[in-house]
Amino acid sequence: MKQKEPDAHSYDLVAFIGLSLVAIDANIEQTVAPWEKRDYWVKADRFRMEWGWAGQLGREILIALKAGDWPNIALCSAKIGQKLSNVKVTERSRIGTPWIGAWDKYKAQ
Figure (spheres, helix red, strand yellow):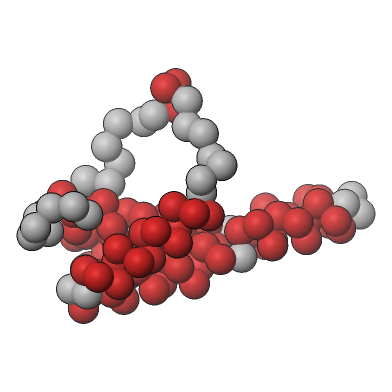
């Protein structure tokens, strides 16, 4: 976000982040269903609370991207960074560049 003008790479990254957060939100209930079947209500509710923000921020950043509102994208990125500040990604978990083409995928929806 420090660059002067966004390029195709910037659009792909932001679209990937937004689409990923929306996908996380769409799968929360599916994720907690097995815990609820085992009466792990607290664990299920904690998971919902920990990830309940994902859908809203995902949709917000995608709307800003579509409008070309880069100041709002930067604000959303900061909020997402705060939410994910405790997440550590190991070297073995890095999977390349899955964000390439995300902007085209978003535009096609």
